[in-house]
Image 1 (tube, one colour):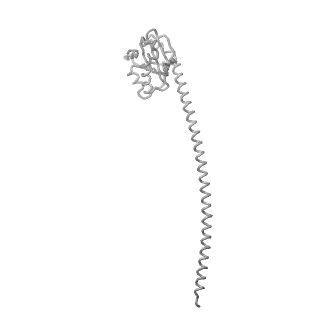
Image 2 (tube, helix red, strand yellow):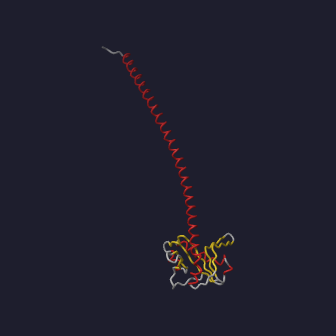
Image 3 (cartoon, one colour):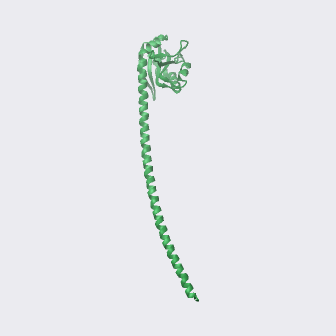
Length: 216
């Protein structure tokens, strides 16, 4: 059987039409699948955005909680400091009199302003010509000792009425961190601590000679 050119062309066109129809069908299937994938991406993106919002909200909550914890820690530390002051104050006169400094008056929480500057003292013990300033901490750190020494160096600038006094310094704490107590001793400061027997004691040995910070 002989196939004419017209029949061959017709058959080829039929194949093209069938192939085109399949391509269109396949293309439509791809479009539907792509559409579905695109919808899924949109949904996933929406979920990510919601998750980001939740993370941001959680982060803000954590930040607020952290601020409250810091405030509570500050209040806790302040209350401990006041408790230690209350423990030290009744025995402070006796303790320093035993060390040859005849103080007879105790003034807690002394504050003095000079221009924009402020100096705050936890305890101040004095007589007619001698004065002991005590820094009280729940935990004494090396930086606390350094800062206190700077305050003592500036003391008479804030309190000129005591310019003729012999000025001594002391640190008191429930806990001594690092080498803070040793540094205080070396710098001529009295070191007061809470003990199990006498409640409050001066830890400096009898060979200790306090520094007169009132000398220029």
